[in-house]
Length: 299
Length: 321
Image (cartoon, rainbow over all chains, first blue to last red; front, side, top):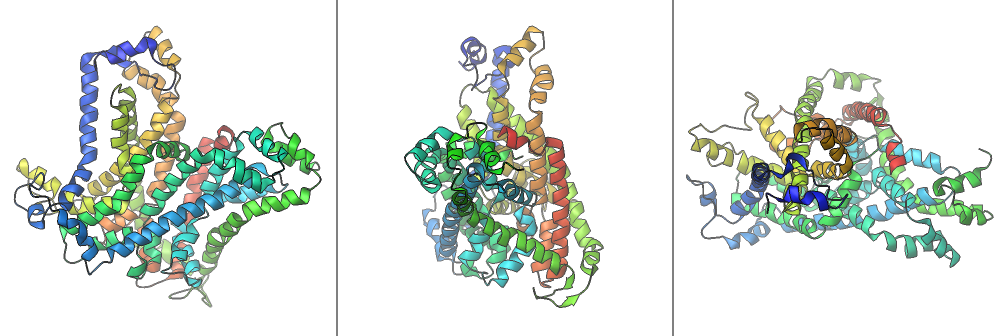
């Protein structure tokens, strides 16, 4: 089956979409080789995940043993609670901080940037172009590069070690606003006209018609934004000076500089920190892929 | 621009501007609506993007250790300090080396993965997911796996275990800059994390290549394989390739997480942002020199982005959506 597929697929292949690359007219060897190479690459890509699971469920003696143990014979399920009982790092607190920051960062960014994107795309105003250019200019400077000035500002506001300091400065993404504007430019105008006929203003049309009809796009941007927020490190590191304000990434980083290393604990903590995103990934992959395709190429 | 209202109304609509035009009377209300929609974002942009940069520009001309409201004006002294600082200029060298390795390797790997996945008839979604999965992992978590398990310098690290099977002595991957094994660690971790992301971009582009091109090539007697790849696939992917290379370059410029975590106790192998972190937020808390460094880096990234705009055409994404 595998072997004949490329050739057989040729005549009745759907015209676009899956576009079978009919290279090398479906030879058995070519196809088997392709699957072998892809399979090897896939195995290599999965090795780090294997290491997390193996180390998280082993004892330190097994991890550091003379012979490589492929998988613990006696799985240490008790390891699951260990990161939460570690007196040196408040892991539970850092998880909670990451959850709060991740959710509020996503909700806030979507709200603020989508409104601005809609205003720029759809509300006629004679200086709209100038405003849009002021947004475009900020695309040239990645926020990571300006973390020193941002820290200077946020610390003089007294926002160090606070949720405000972690969340608010990251909400105003010129790029996300730009993406929303581009999206709304392509939104079918007829739907809004109907809303207008029904007597809705801009706000009403936006909330009752535009947003409910754009949930796919919102979901795609939300997925990307959440992953970015959960995984971000530099800004939480700068802002989280006190351990009570650490996000999970900063907590993980602290494990790496600790004097004594407790391997199974550290890897269990890593596994727990990745789990929410793997769930996001498995259940929202459709939007994620769409989001990547949409956000990856910027102008 | 005399016909402001009409022009403004017609611009986004591409011709179908009748309903807004009928509301021409309450122009003030439209202006109010515009500011209500964009106001929160623009305020934030002003406060958290424009103000810090301007404040930083001001700070960079002052002696500002441990303070953000300095009084001693020092002119260009901070810039002179940073630009003659071997560690700061060395960080630009580190970035250059890093970019020279990571950009081509990621480009090639993600393209190869996309080509392979695109040719699969079965299990395509499965393989795509496997390669894409690392995108969900943070740089910190990946650095931890790499540092403590894959490239742990001790005997039980995975890489050293595998070397041991072939009778090769273990290598202290991250412990010394000479020989620079740490580059292997740094490059592979980023490769693993980002290849799947760019593979998705290439996959999307591959599926946009009209199949007729391949049919025509087959009719013309082009050999499938290298020839069609070289003369059809690659040219058709040019826009995506350029975009990917520039995105990779900008991402490499901002590299921080893996360097910071993998090389935490070293003074070598510091890219610009790590150097800046230690300079401005380390023991000396020198915001003046830190701000000067941040502005130099900002200017450099602006140049890269402008170059990107020149190469790709700045309004391209706007027109093509």
